[in-house]
Image (cartoon, rainbow, N blue to C red; front, top):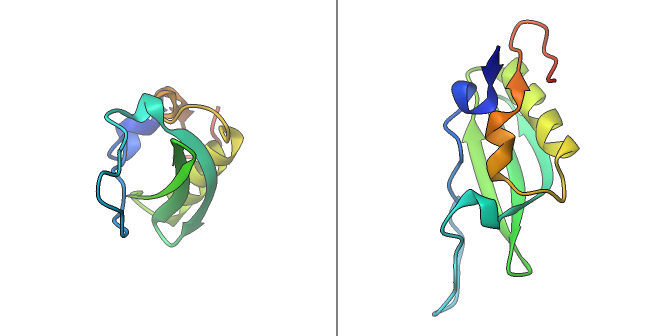
Length: 98
């Protein structure tokens, strides 16, 4: 069975934004807490919380079906660290995540 990190480039990076001088950023995905997420086409967008700030993330999935499945996985992991999401089993065939 494939995992999330087998299907998409995991962990994703922060997708830009304007930040003030001296802003701190996470050095690893274990410091980021999963926030709201949604799929649009073959991309998944979500917020990650770090030091009480929302940071925008985006990752590309192989197709729209996989993006929807990944968005569901992220939704089920809201409030938890981002890094372990990459180890969750992922099925492209039946669009179900375990």
